[in-house]
Image (cartoon, rainbow, N blue to C red; front, side, top):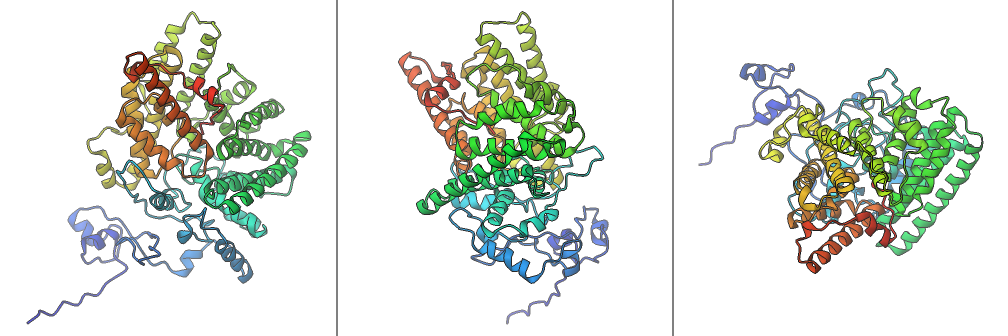
Length: 574
């Protein structure tokens, strides 16, 4: 005789802790009475939403919560039937050939949504496009946690809005194809522009809102530049579809040309009020050339930036507005990082003299590429001294400079790390940490891999040490990068991994590089594919030279910039 199953009345008002423990909760708190009685942390009653698998209809347990209508839409603009249908039609028309995430896309992504931060973990050395697509939904979409890090803006200026809600009116007024590309920019490209996608991501807020703020030539130039960058990215993602591929290239070039035309109107009579839009346009066009197209013409835009910035030496708009500062520091960062790849000595420029010294005064300088101010200044110093040495001008105090850089970059001399980054079995331990601690750990981890890569750059550019001398640094950068990728899904700065990869000689290290290349080469960014070709050529030439001279590959010094020059590349490491 079978025993009758006890009937259980399920409640949806229990705290998360009681639900996981399968105990009755009094629904009052936090903390609730059961959690208080057992002296355990009460996780509260916050909303946690997840995507339902479109094929099976399943979703992770203990994650989905109901939300009443009033709470869901409180403070949001009310859209009429026509506006709603327009958004839905735009999403229905998205080509699945480039949008692997269509099943989880929503026309309401412009609204800020908080969700769980559980990341899929893969130990496989390779990643196919289907798994990448799944990871991208988790880590590269606008549904990433809105409070990943505390705000880097400590000033009272609250103009950097984390929400795109103010731009909805402009979004609805766009032609359908342009609205689709703008949506692709905000939901796919913007999270790839910054290693830590948070509410302070300027490519989700500052750039779109600046492009849609008015109809001036400067704003229109940025608007078309954004559409061009988006279309080039779609163009790269659609290479398996020749007909659509050619169409997207044509669309991208059309908006690229329109941006240049509008920009030329603005640059002739640029006002201080148009500084943000013009500077953001120049930066976006540079990214479109070097990142999306893989063209060497991206440096031409930097030449234009130098002349443009000099017009504002007296006004210094980057000191008056958070938006201006965010855009200006991106220009300064991009210049310093990109010059480490330049095969020609360049020296200091107007961008460095005017921008870097000014915008770097804020403590959060460098957050958009996941590096600290002191490290970026050291990178700039190393580059400048390497250029002098290449010209035969060896400074008398070179030894002192090298020693000071080594001390500054030492892990023992870094106040930014207030967490133990080398805990045993750190991946599994991280999964058990509270979400805020995971975020803090990843922040410190990215800072450290950038610092370690700068050590490699110092040994590479000035000390001319063979790979054997930096083996431990290479392994450290790559292992930190793999942990970061497993936790975040692959949105990581290109410069530190590339610098480490050029000195990777051990099979285990090269396998980690290949894992990163496999993921990053499927993001629709052409400079990742160029990086793969360049790295493979460096490894090949080093192995051949080692075999010809009876050496191990880690004893062979290889000037990767010389290899780049022979291949006709000019890699944008952003």
